[in-house]
Image (cartoon, rainbow, N blue to C red):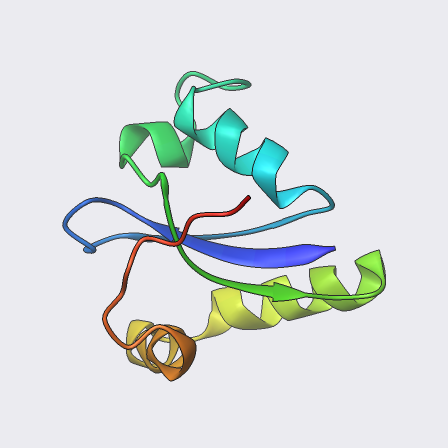
Length: 92
């Protein structure tokens, strides 16, 4: 299970999600599969800047809820702890 953070091209908006297949979920976000008026489509949040892997869904969902409560400054510091330049991450 993965908790992940996406951003838009100008890095002004963040989206936090959870999934069991990160590659599939990133594809779904990028190509608008699902809801056409979803948050990621409206704000063009397609760029992966951070992710964590968990052994269980319960752990991942708990972490997602925790991160969503954080202020933007704290989220920025979390991203910068592993991705200081906010590079758009690519997965295999």
